[in-house]
Image (tube, rainbow, N blue to C red; front, side):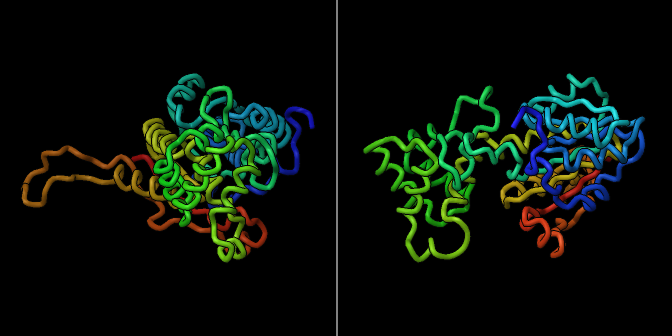
Length: 321
């Protein structure tokens, strides 16, 4: 496969597309920023809505995704100007400054980890393929990889990461087994790690549900890429850059991501925080966003059947005041 080739994976169906478009409420001439460009599934539709007088900004930290998405936008939305920016949305301030835009009318964060670039076996994200334990989304700017986390973190930190980021109920057992195995030889590949996980989980639990390594791989990936820290800083920046009336739409697939989004939107939408016994406001706290989705939107049963990626998806939308 050549660089920039649009594989079937890159053309995966964008999750909850009608809900995203309705939530962003795009107009011709709008500036819209797709903070998780991937294969541009959402972006080509957003580009069509903002049209020739608008601007699409697309952010991704993967060169292959940027090239493939650029070609797709040229083909499917040829009339809409676009700028593709290499980086992580945690660095949104710098990226938007480089794009030389005064403000943005809509932001999309699709936090799903099924981005096509993650599916290539050599990068170590998949427990279905044997590969070196890497899991870095941007290897050129991140010295920490999964092998280092697994082979150097102490047992307590490993258990915490597996429990908090992976919501793995056998976190302590897996962490203990990691430490035992690596004392004999390093855990170097994805299959090595899968074997450790399977050895730590009771046989009865392995026979039911999804792959026993799914939660642990998720947890290590989040740690390697600092995903939750990056999300908070990215959302803070999006709120700062949003024009009045501009909207921020977040699709999350993990309870921790959804909680961060919900908490931040609630904090930014809150007015006076003075104690109730103070007759006149002295805090000066004013809301800067309005929450559009009081409850998160979920995918319809029909979409989940058609597109399994949507099963755990939740959408929250806020509007800059």
